Length: 270
Image (cartoon, rainbow, N blue to C red):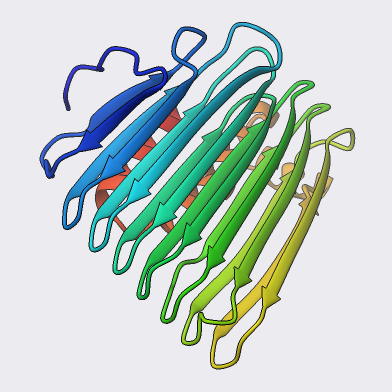
């Protein structure tokens, strides 16, 4: 892995084909925005680490994938204060985007991924862990404008303490996007009676001959579940950790790309 690069606030960075190395960027108070371009036929593996010291700080990134390019991206938000984060993706013909978002702090985070070209792919896996008094409001739109697009949107979160997670996902298939295959899944686990969550999926299909669906669930840990661990000598603190790791870890296992999966596991464990 390469040494983290210097800040790229407001800069446009063109990614070249370098499958053996991970490009690392930061979004911070000094560098709040970033524009990435992946040229035609190129492949890139990228990590973006996002932080903020000031309350309600704004962070933004835009990504343009030219035709037949590939981008695997892990985006990590850690912050002791809240932030407003936006991500915009434009996916060209035959291009492939796989985004893994990890949210570990209070935020209002909006993602829009538009597949404009035929046979484009936009897959989004989002993992959220809210604790204490964190409030995470996440929104993702997977938009398909051309034929034979593909890509699932999965949003998975755990809330404990007094944390709140609001999860809004949508799959939008336009009138020219025949043959598209896209699904949406939202799953949130509540570890405490004081934790709250709201999961709202949306599906908007404006053509025929597509495969699309959506589902959402919010579940709670029951006292019997913790008693089961206690009866086998596992402390309550350890049991809660196992629930978090198991629930969020299953989301990581669904990531198909091995490089992206490994990066996500490493970053989430820290």
